[in-house]
Image (tube, rainbow over all chains, first blue to last red):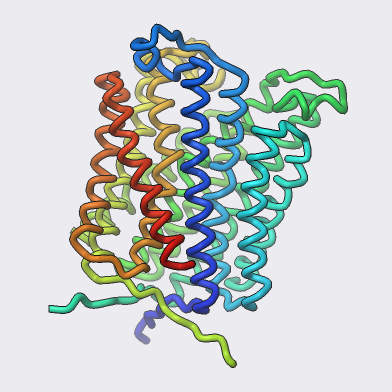
Length: 148
Length: 148
Length: 148
């Protein structure tokens, strides 16, 4: 018996929704890098001795910079896994409208998460975070079930 | 000459194996987030001042929380790259059975890694870690060779 | 109306270029892990108490190890997002030659980044970093525009 090649079948509407919103999510993460960088400049808290040398700024930790970094690290802990698991979920032939909502809600929750963490500094970020976490858990369970 | 579009050809058995085990891997990383979060609650070691305020807990570092965080960071350093490089490896038309074993061994090694790091606290985690590292190196060399 | 499945159309030359250079990028990140690990051994700066116990080395922070770790963390903040957004960009039916250059320049900039950070310790790393950052921003804006 010869092994059969398949291609990756994805509904057109879902691929377009996925690519658009993942584009937003990657852009959001790039802006997070800029936010951390600008806060380093603004609070004169360089990352390395050579960065601060031209401005006679020493390496220090500043609470606002550290808060931005924590928000950024949280992005790294969650977003790449959503990108992967939602792509695999698209291969399970899901219904269009609910899947589009899952993608949109996840991306918007991550943007609100950053705002609640770095601007509002409010623990409302925790339920917002859980939206994203439970989305990832739901998607991975669906993928595991479908492909088992 | 007109450029030719191709689609991504993957053997059916390999795509199913890949999706199932990547689902397990993403779920494992979500559980790692929960493990870190619960240890923060249990040891009263909040991440931010606002998180601890309702419980009158100050921001402290606790060795168990930090250990969980190190295990988590190690996941971030390895797992996303495996997810990508093993997907590209599937496009090199590899044999089915050995490739399924590579995927299974990697995922199981990452689960054992977390256990050996956070529960056993044993340096047996280092050879377990190297299984995953050498898997990634082998897969990336195979992909580079195939597509060069 | 029935939803229509599509497959992922990518130009052959671009898929080959992408897979080859992403292989290089994943290998580079594996080598970064080894660079951090060897610097821990060389400077006797273990990550955990159990790692240092056989060598009677205590957990300390060493500036060279920390510098390698910062370079590594910067990889994690950027490379996975490039891998994703450049893949989605390939689906926008881009011209072959400029897209091949974007991929090559990004990968080479990340290698030069690590060298400028950990070997040269020079702030030339900042413009090199910005090449990669602006590449990611450009690609995500292109993807958002194409799929909107």
